[in-house]
Length: 262
Image (cartoon, rainbow, N blue to C red; front, side, top):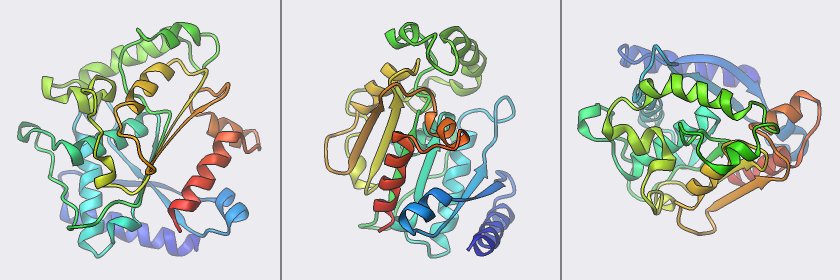
């Protein structure tokens, strides 16, 4: 399965870049999801596509890349319901950018390709873990968790200060680059373009309050699962796996993804 997935994704990425040389996409690595295989007997290959990083890639370059990749998959016959999108940290913010673009297309001035799904279709799922949704450190959770999270609040602040000029490239970029700044109800109607959405954040994350605010911008419904991990830190699911453990969040994500693939 790994060999098949590696060959499939290499061909996919090569084809994308051949047809869109101005916005290259790279294949970083292939992950064999042992946790899913051993726990749920679900087989699959997961591709990690290389997105442009700041300072080389300003907003909305990364959004353009993911849109082009998805357009290609759909053009080759992949059904949207068989496309499951996941991201963590900045990648989680990018998944929210994509969802924003689907619901509120980015202004033409930013030159992001449109992404229209075939009539009656939806993406299979979007899994959003510890997303970066704000470039500010004013939320109470920043001070509350500065000695608990993987980075102190001042370190997050320096990171955001550096990244801000590359992400907030215009006034129009606001709700896309910072989901926290989007109007109330911004993500209402998400269930019209994706079957299931999962959003997680840790109780001890500096960005916890900002992520919780974004969760509230979604309309309620069975399609939406939100989870605040008790004593969890930024991307704690990875830290647990590095320690050879399957923590509560990692197990919950595995169960949720397995349900999405049924």
